Amino acid sequence: MTVSAVRYLVVPAAEAADAEQAARIGDRTILWCAADHKLGRASRTVPGLLLVTQVGRSFQDDHPDVVPLLDHGRQLVISAADKPRRRNNHHWRAEPLRPGVVVDIPPLGAQRIERTVTDLLDQLSPTAYQADVTWLANLPTRHSLSPSYTQAVDFAAARMVAHGYSTTRMPITVGAGRSANLIGDRPGAGPGRRGLVLITAHLDSVNHAGGSGGSAPGADDNASGSAGVLELGRVLATRRWQHDVRLILFGGEEQGLHGSKQYVAALPAAERARVLAVLNMDMIASKNSSTPTVLLEGAAVSATQISDLTAAAATYTGLKVETSFNPFASDHVPFITAGMPALLTIEGADSANGNIHSASDTLSTLNWPLAAEILRMNAAALAGWLGEVSAVARPRPAGSVVSRGPGLLDVFVAGTDRAMHRKAWDGTTWRDYESLGGVLS
Image (tube, rainbow, N blue to C red; front, side):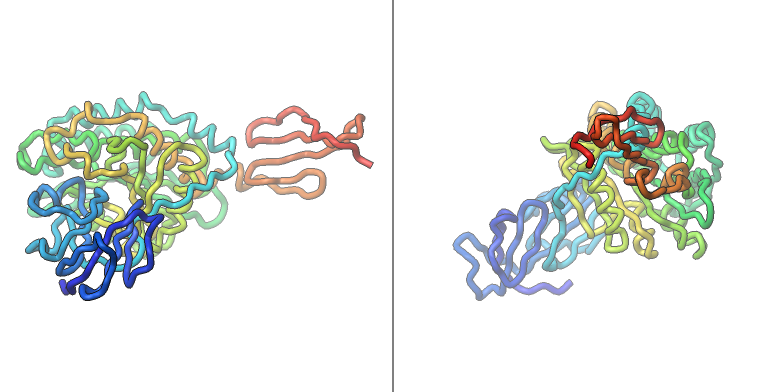
């Protein structure tokens, strides 16, 4: 890892001045230049700058004496003087800091609220979701090689089957042991060639200090995401979609993404070509900051999907959204590496959650309203990617009958009062005529 001595300065993003190089990380920007150049009174000189991406506080727990120059939770900037001996492990990665945007806070542009989407979101059940999280977190552990992991797979499979999904169990290896991924499929009903939308999470949990036999309730990491897959699968099963839905719960994530790596490696080229989106959920239920925040993490290949989720958050939730094209350490990464549009939804400021990977990751630490908001955002985006069949098949006549969107019709007529009147079809029912005012000549 080659670095050069630099002078650096951290400023609010809105106040960033010109510099030779700069990287924006959330609401702050770090500026730097050659060590012998000027950058302002408060600037300091270091041997070089490194970007650390971590899961939770994994890097800071491994290196408690390192003081970050900029701390944004999942992302840290540290001095090259504190360069770790190892470049990465399964839970953190260190690399030279490069100019550009590391974490963005995109402007939230709300879209038109669609009645068909709000009807779908209304079917999300906090009670059902919380019950599934509770059942999973009450197991002594979900370590990928434990008998209780198999219990969790059995439980989730029964849920999927009850909602009309056909299930398969894909054997995987985790080190010298054997585990499994659980896959649930529901075919689309649209005409012509169908795409494929995947909703994923890792089912396993871990206790680093206690080893494979230690208590690992994994309530946030990742019963919250696994139950999210089951709840979104339940709600989507109430509609007929253009494209296929596939639910996947991976094993072996905590030991190095074994389940997702092996799944992607075995996925035929024809199936890869059908993938429209991979939505991965990992830790969605711990509120670590005063403002409910979600991080959308992907890559250039998933930029459109990240934009869709950003719009869904602005339209149907009160979430603050951050985005990153620096994917790391969850099951979206193998899909991105293989060129598929995958992304991670994860709670914001996750490094403030010091309970993960321990016996302390319990139900008492969860924030149910945050998880509900993230599920609403995800469900709204999924509705757009999947395309409801009734909306796709409905004709779009012209003239006095106008389609203003999928499944939405307006009929315009002249009333006896010589004003324009409109009757609207919202996808499920006709609304009564309303006067638009004015006088027609």
